[in-house]
Length: 461
Image (cartoon, rainbow, N blue to C red; front, top):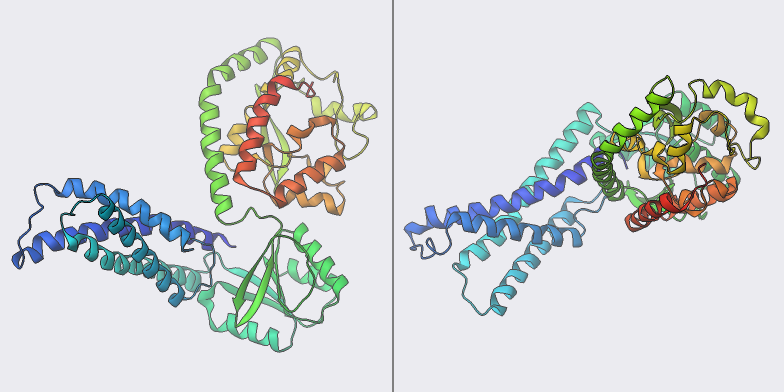
């Protein structure tokens, strides 16, 4: 899913909430200012506008919950207008019915039947209007300004391929742009074509594409972080994470590297922002003490920015300096003492490059606390695979690169399951399991286990 689709899906939540509140206010004003000339208003004193507004705000969250249960916030870019209208009507009707049942069970008469039934109709109208405006805005931004479009390569030239190409070309507002179409290419030809025009999604429409080439193509798309879909008459099962969509009347199956998609990304980012902000505020006094101790002992900066890779992007990992200033230059001379001979990582105990303060802050993992700033900036997540160095990643085998599909984390399943005592293959297996089976609850458990491990585990020294 492209960022534009996720953006408008997330935007629909506050827009729906606003429409429900405006519908409630419109109903009240319609009854008290216009219809009052035909029928006197009897509830102005026990239900004034300010009290009614608070009531509407509370009811609006009930409606949002019902909208969510009805699937109005499911991340599907191709939901038909008719389907969306039906879901809105059913959801608004269900919310209104719950209100009527609640009033009945309280055994009291509501101030105005019009406020209940009129609000039902006006909510439907306003929510439809709000979503109509968003649809029009999305189509304008995508159709005219290419906002978040999918740059697609289509593989195949049969009837299925022709229908897909015609559908994409006839509907520029759908968010797809064909930059290349190949009939029955070799893998090397596909790789070259993807790099030249700039492709972020491959649609395999050729049902006779050889199975071994399909597997190699999927691996390549995973390594390059390119979306992959195929017409559903292929019989390979290539991943446990997939979604099915329709394009030109044909079912397309999208293979995902992880189920951390759509709303999962939103929830995870919210937790990252909240957790990193709270942690930085709480740890700020400790930061001052550590900074003073580092400067007191040795010359050099308080912080170091280490070149690391997160989701295939370079960034500067922020840590308290725990080593002498030229530590990286001395690393080649220590490679013979590397205790991680099972993989590309470097690890040794009693590292002579450590300072006295550095040994202490590593003992309690205090040196890693500035990483919360990387999390706040969006370069890392609170939970994810370990961020590794470019020279280490250059030595990765193909199956190791799967862990680069999501952001690196300040902590992760591998870190709380054995830390540096794990073999590299075991670490990759745990990180792969994490990204295949991500859940918000799993993140919370890993964060809690990390807090405990900071005081119980000393393998970082």
